[in-house]
Amino acid sequence: MSQDKRAVGREELDAAAKSLAAQGKPFDVANIWEYLAANAATAGSKLDLANIIMSVGGAFLVIALPIILGLVADKYHFPAMLTGALSSVAVFGVAGLLMWHKYNLKLAGGLLSTVAVVAVPVAVWGFIHEYLKTGMDYNTESLIIFGSAAAASLVALKAVRFPFLTMPLYGSLWVMATIVIDMVAPSGNGWLFGWASQNALILDMVFGGLLCATAFSLEKNQTEDFSFWGYLFGLTTFWFAWTQLGLGGEAGKLLFVAVNVGFILLSAMLKRTIFLVFGVVGTFWYPFYLSFQLFADNALMLWSSVALLGAGVMGMGVVYFKKRDTINGALASVLPKLK
Image 1: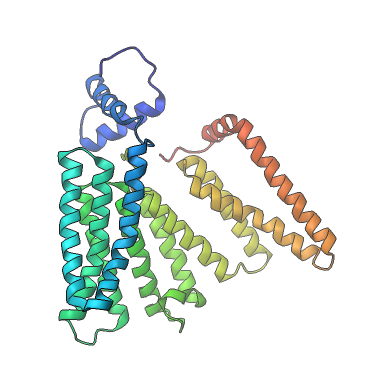
Image 2: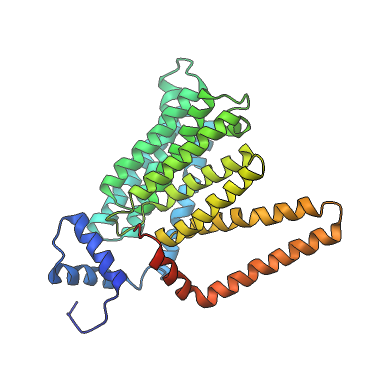
């Protein structure tokens, strides 16, 4: 890219600084222009037709391959499934590396690598059932299977730095944590329905918080988003576990609202919409709760108050839409910058 005269925004410079720091390069003019040139080559292509087609095709592959391999096991037994899974790991893994490193097709390479990763736990499942017929209990078998998926994700991320590869990583960690939590604090309903146990819900909240902390630790010096899926799994686990746990008396409900207001502020500091979504829902839950408590015996007043609250929320949305730059600037000036 020729060093033509154009305005370079603060966000571009911040992104360049993070990228160069991550690569151990000095923050000088030559390296900044090199970074801007690399970005300019792909700036307009993120939502082009080719990328949309590749994304849709990759999504179909990620969803369909485990189902196909499961059907193969059902019809032709585990040796056939194991062969198919190992072949899928090899074929899609090599294809992903070639697309990523040789042909510079990052999206195609990343998606094919993700397909290879989701085939790994299927291969491990087939291997266990075919060669380790030792009466392994269900929880141990599940931990090994999902542990292999997490390990495969980490290996793939070392070779292909594709943010979507963190989805099977965080998803596997979530399932493994849920299994372990049910083993430590059993609910009697199995790990999938462990939310029925109060102790399990508390541990779920701790795990959700740890996932969010891990995602936050990945924010620094990253030009690509490796934190999104960590925040999604972590915040969802924390928030829903707390709501299922029960909010206690009025003090507990007010604490819940205060934490959700904190999520709204965090969304401004981290520039993460997911904190805003959960924060708004949690914050406005309390006025709706009060409406149902105050007007439980008067249907007209109850639904009138709900309608007014809904109109108020919409009004706040309109005000924010029109004044968002001013509001975001005001928040940025008083809140610490975390990114």
